[in-house]
Amino acid sequence: MAFEGLSEKLQNVFKNLRGKGRLTEEDVHIAMKEVKMALLEADVNFKVVKNFVKTVEERAIGSDVLTGLNPAQTVIKIVNDELTDLMGSEITEVKFQPGKSVTVILMAGLQGAGKTTATAKMAGQWKKKGKKSLLVACDIYRPAAIEQLQLNGEKVGVDVFSLGTGVKPAQIAKQALEKAEKESYNVVILDTAGRLQIDEDMMAELQEIKNTVPVHQTILVVDAMTGQEAVNVAKAFDEKVGVDGVILSKLDGDARGGAALSIRAVVGKPILYVGMGEKLEDLEPFHPDRMAGRILGMGDVLSLIEKAQQSVTLDEQQGREMTRRMQKGKFDFEDYLESMKQMRNMGGLASILGMLPGIGMNPAELDGVVDEKKLGRMEAIVLSMTPAERKNPKLLNPQRKFRIAKGAGVDIAEVNRFVKQFEQSQKLMKQMGGAGKHGRGMFGMPGRRGGFPF
Image (cartoon, rainbow, N blue to C red; front, side, top):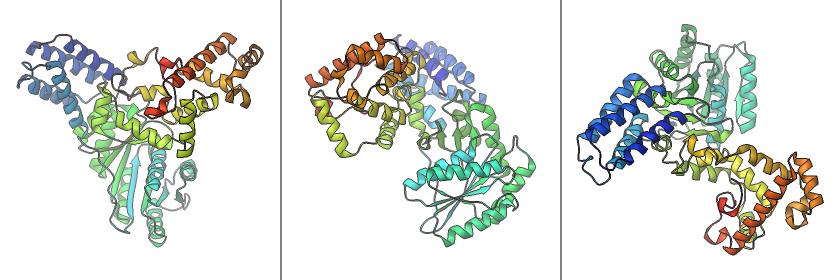
C-alpha cells in the first residue's frame, strides 16, 4: 500500500524523539532533516517538502513546545496538522446542481489511469445516495472502452448511453444530456477518451465538449503509481481544460504517496476520491485528516467503522442469533466462514490492522501478525468439512480430520491445531458470557487470546 515506506521512516523518527524526553532545537533540526529525506524519497514535490519542513520547524522551535511536558508528542501533533493542511484540511465533495437540474460531470485522464472504472464506481456510490446517473461513452477511438463502460455500468446497476464510434464525442454528450433531461436523471457522467500522453487533440476534444454542453465539474483521474508525473499531468490538464477535483487511482499499489501529498499544494485542486482496490466500495472519499493519521501510524478508526457498516451482510435477526450462540460458546465453523467473508469485504486483515491506532500502516509492525496464506489454509480446512461437521465440531474424529486435511491440501497436524484453537475460543467465549454482552466483535470473530492464529 502507498505510504508504507514513508510511514515506517516517519514513525522511526518520532520513536527517537519520544526516547529523548526533553528536546533541544538541535534535536528538532535533526528530526526534520530525516523527515525531509523521507518525504523526498516518497516522491513528494521538492518545493512542497521544503515549505513543509520549514513550517513545522518554525512552529516547533518558535513556541513553548520544547519546554512543555511532552515536547515529542507536540512535535508529532504539529507534523500531523501540517500534513492534513498540505492535503487540503477537510474533505471536498462533488457539487451537484440544486433541485431537478441535471449535473454534468466530465471525466478526464490519460489512458490506463483507471478513469472508466472510477466513473462507474462513483455512479454506483451515488446510486446508494438516491442519485440516478447516466454514464456516457465518449471514447470513440477504442470499442473496448465502450464495452468496459457498459460492463461496469451493468455491475453497479447504472444505465450507459452510447452512440458507438461514428459520432463525435461532443454530439454524444449533447444527446445524452437531452435524454437525461427527458428521463429525469440527476447526473450525467461523460467518460472521455484517454491518450498515452497529453496532446493538443485530446485537449481540443475536451474543450469542444465543454463548449457544447454545460459541464459543472471536471474531474481528473490520475495514477498514484506514477508519482510526481501524476502532479505534472494534473497541472497540464488544469492549465489547458480546467480541473475542479482529482481522483487518485491505484493508491493500494506500490505508490510512494508523493502525488497525494503534492497535488493540492502544486495544482491547488482537491483530491475527491482515492482508489484502494477493484471493488465498488474501494473508491473512498479522501479525508486529509484520516490519511495524515494513517501515514503517522495513528490509525483511521472512522474509515474502519464506515467500511464495517458498508460490508456487514448480516441482518438484525441473524446478528442476534450469532450473539446468542457466542454467549453459549456455540460459535461454529459456519459462523467462522461468515466472519471471514465480512473481513474480506473490508479488504482483509492487513487492511483492517492498518487502520488501527498503534499499528497504522507500518509494515514492520504488521510483519508476523498477518499471515494471509495461513488464513487461506484455515478457510480451506473449513470448506473441506461437510455441513454437519461445520455445525458440530465434535464430530471431528481422526478419520474425518484426515479426510479434511487431504481435501484442504494441508498436513493433519495443521487441522488438529486449528480445531484445538477453535475449541479454546469457544470455551473462552462461554466463560466470558460471549462477546454479545458487550457488543459483538466487528466480524463476530474471537480475538487472538481465544487461540485463533491471526
